[in-house]
Length: 70
Image (cartoon, rainbow, N blue to C red):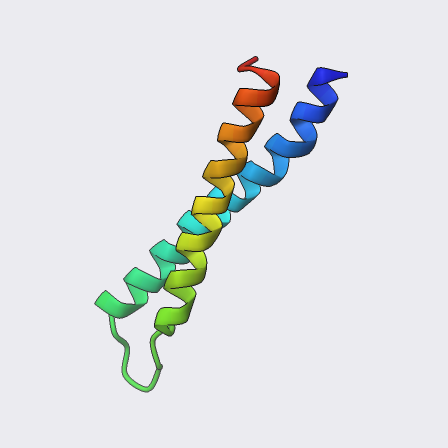
């Protein structure tokens, strides 16, 4: 039962961490490599990526504290 509950927290946490890192990376990349005629991604996406990453990291910590590292 602990493994199922750990997976219910761990899987969304992993998705949030990966999505946050990806969104942050794409935002920084589009700011550094500007193309003509294309507007770079807005800074709000950077904040969203960092927020997703932080939420995922907190969920991973919660998973480890509640159910232990498997």
